[in-house]
Image (cartoon, rainbow, N blue to C red; front, side, top):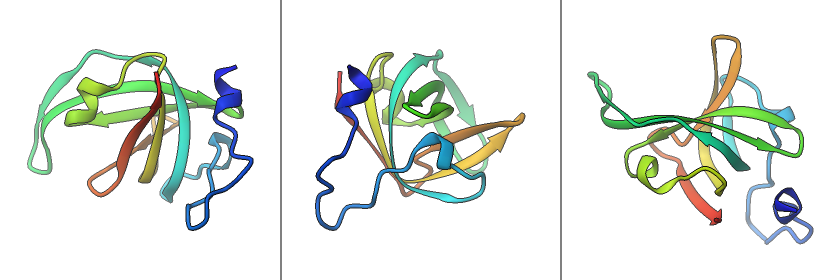
Length: 114
């Protein structure tokens, strides 16, 4: 049922087409992906030269597969297990052999449904 809600039969004009997990490639940007958050791991604080603030890992899926998610800043507090989220203008990387997605610095995360 939840995955059916993510289908996009009428693509709004001007919107980036929805990518699927099976189409992701490490090192390439993400235009738009929608995922069901299966699990959100505990928040931790990071203090590095490139980022200082809260960070949390999560796991998500769409109808084609599973992917890791990195949540930054305010997104850490607002995303919960079971949420359907949309990541736009994000990135995809490979860590320990698995694909992970994130908004990075310039992307945005939207909660579509709870």
